[in-house]
Image 1 (tube, rainbow, N blue to C red):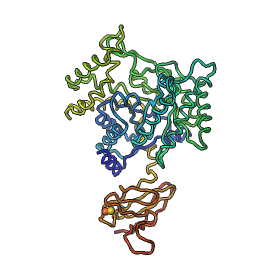
Image 2 (cartoon, rainbow, N blue to C red):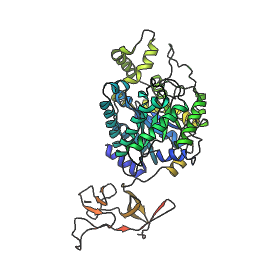
Image 3 (cartoon, rainbow, N blue to C red):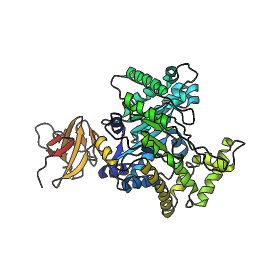
Image 4 (cartoon, rainbow, N blue to C red):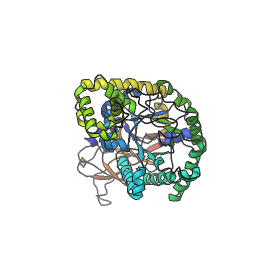
Length: 493
Ligand code: FES
């Protein structure tokens, strides 16, 4: 089923992509700073939530938005990367979305306690997750080693050094795994959410050390595209005894200065703020105005889900009963019931994943319309409207080594880029007429997925026929590339 979802998306022209080029273009000042990219963490009802997000984006001709899941969320929501990306891509297919889909690993975080006990095992666990995520189409990864910043050291450079070294090592690991033609967007992090606000000095100390460590790991390794900072938020918001949220203030001046230095000195897209969804509504206009590159939105969607009148009572009561039975250790003496459930309820998504999938379509539709209303608000305030244009311009639309089928002058033609060269050939297998653009390519040889006939996409000849002998071949067509446009010269049928 996952292969079919990918194939359907491929034919529709929607595909997992990296936002790296768009972010670097922003760092060079080639893209307006009028928008902040929303990254939406989806903990449950993933397919329906992603559909709501895609609908909201389509209404406003948007393109700069991200779906993401954190290392911790992968654990407690029971969504491995391949499952998450399949649901998000299926949602895009269902809504007939054309264009890049940015799927991100959020907080791929070094656990400080586990790192202290066994550094190699903890780093290895994050590396394994990186490999799994890239294999699932996560071409955007936020590495978070801010947990091992050592504030006991006297200078900022010494404090940030371990964070910088581990982030560089994980970046090199990403570069060794990314598919040909994709530069995975990698984010670093200097400030832990809920801790003290980040400073420009910390950003500079981190970036100098990071760049030095990265160049020590290999010449020409591509570095970060953005940097996560802390400017006043708390993951999940600050919950009051009656279950409502306290107003939290963001230091937009700090966020603005960090974004400016990130762009002007280091060529990054700017700063990223986590834990933003529970801020007061009037804060959201301020993100684009302060030049913030990206914000992460999670808890608001969870709150809508749990507080919706449409959520069936038996599901909500079942989830809360599970929390009482399984999360009692997280309850402190001063917590009211409202505070306890608010703080822990994300952990009930995993055990109830299948029950949530089983909610009838009418109810899920109503829930997803509630989510869409909130997404409309976020996307409008963050300036997502009209961003499809910059995405089309800056995000590579054709990955090397992946054939794409088109109809040109009435003929089925497949086009593939190998390195810098483009090749075009008949998209019909001479054996039995099946399409070839979903075959397996190794070097220049494409294997038809139906019965294994093989053809060289450059010459059209079969490597299985001895040179000089007659045999089946595919027709090739001349390709011209000019001004970023690829033209295939095909005589009319
Ligand atoms: S249709 Fe291609 S090998 Fe049979």
